[in-house]
Length: 465
Image 1 (cartoon, rainbow, N blue to C red):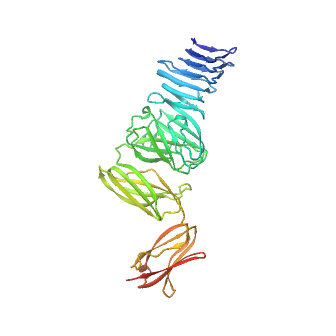
Image 2: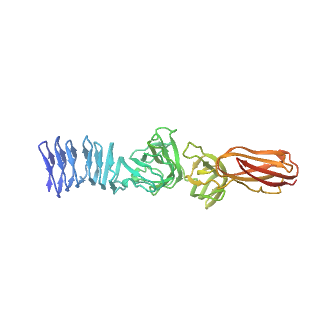
Image 3: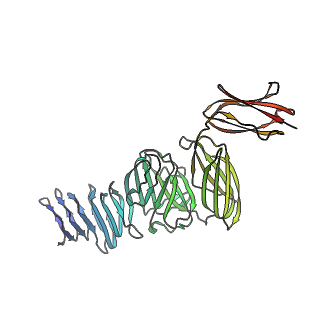
C-alpha cells in the first residue's frame, strides 16, 4: 500500500494489520490513535505525533534519501522496532524517543541533538558502523547480577563477570562530542555509568566506538581517563589503565571500583607521543608467604624504572603505598622481563599497580592486579635465620587473627635484654630483623619468646662474633 502522506485527525482511529505501508511522511493529530498492528511502515519524510501511536508488533522504517528526517513528539515517542535505512542524510530527534525492541541501523545516522534515545530493557541495537550510528545521547539500563557479564543491549559496552550483584546499572553513551582530559582533547565518545550497588570487585569493561568518533586522534597511543564530575574539573579526573594501542576501537580495561548511585565518566585521549614503554603483561601470583609480581615490555624508550604500589584497603578509603622499585632498561627495542617479590603482604584483598617512570619524570600507571591473601592457620614463631649470626638475623612469626603481640629476647639466665615487638598487630606473617649490635650484646646463646594471650613459643639463637 502506497500513501502520499499519512494524516490522522481527531475523528480518525486507524488500525493496520499485517500490511506493508509506504508513505512520504506521518502526522498524528491531537486525540488520534494510530495502531500499527503487525504492519511495516516505511516513511521517507518527517514523523510528527501529538496523539497516540501504538506500534504493537509492527516495524517503522525511516528511509528517506538525501534529506534529514525528523521525529517529533513532545511526550516522547515509543517504538517497538525501528530501522534506519537512509542512503544519505540523517534522522534528527526533536524530542526524546524510546525503542523497546529492535533498533537496526542499516545506513545513516540518528542525531539525538539535546535529546536522548532510550533503549528498553529488552531492546537490541544492531548495525552500527562507520557513518551509521547513534550520534548523541544513548541510554540503557541493565541488571548486572553476580557472576554474569552484561552487553548493554548492543551499545558497544560490556561489563565482565564478577561475584558481585551490582543491581541496575545505567549507561549513558555520548557520541560526537569531545572533552578535555588532562590538557588533551578526547575522542568524541565518552561513557557514563551509574550503579545501584557499589562495584568493589575487579571487573573488566569493554568500550567500543566507530572511526567517526576518533576526532583525528592518534589512537595507536591512547590513555584511558575517568571522572566523577563528567570531566568538568581536573581534580575530578584521573588516568585509567595503561597507555595502549586502541586501533581496534574496542578496548578492555579493568574497573577496580564504582560508587553506588553516582555517575562515573570514562573516555580516551592520545598521549601526544609514541608509547615510551610498551607494557604487554602484568601478573600477580600468591606464594606461601609473599606475592610475586611479573611483567614484561615489548620495547622501552627513556624508561627510568617501575615503582610498585600496593593498596591494602581498596574499598575503605585506603591509599596507594610504594613498596618497591625496579630499575628499567632505559632504551630497548627487544622484550624485557621484570619481577618483584612483596614480602609479607597484609591479609585480605590487596591490589597492585606499576608506576612506570620516564627519565624526564613523566609517569603512567598500569592496570590493577588484585589478590586475596588468607590469614595464617596457626600461631607460630620460626627458627631465626641465619643461626648462628653476626650481628643481624631474621625472626619470622605468624598470627592467625588480630591480637596484641609481644616478642622479647632473653639471655641464657632468663634476663630480658631486648623488646622487639610490643603492640597490637593484624593477622599475617611478619619478618623482623634483629641487630645484636644495636642492643650491645656479646657472643653467646639467647632465647627469644613470642607471646600473645595464652599462646607462647620460644627458640634459641646463637650470636657468634
